[in-house]
Image (cartoon, rainbow, N blue to C red; front, side):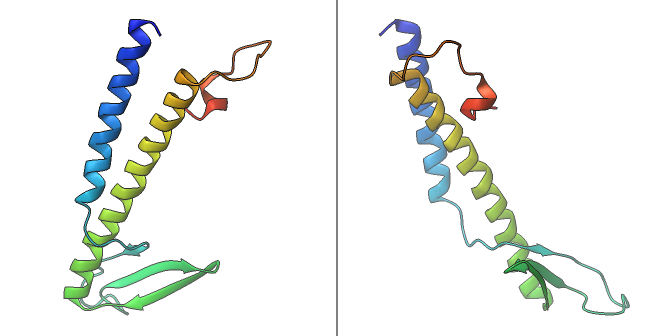
Length: 115
């Protein structure tokens, strides 16, 4: 294997290990969206909205629940972003290191899921 491919693979492995370590430090997670509507908004001050079986569900929260859930939702989004990066790196490593079938033309990055 040429030195450039080896160094690229090592860089991918190092980045993948860094992303894996980030996963270990993510706290509580939750899907959805929370909002601070403030007093006098004509309804719940802290609604939590999410989809359940294609239907939107809304739950009123206390200030403490809002603060906790806001962080859990931020953690969920960080987790999703990290997983997307890990998937992209995994595909890069797959297509760079393991030989595939012969093709008449080279596959582009969009087809390989690298963009």
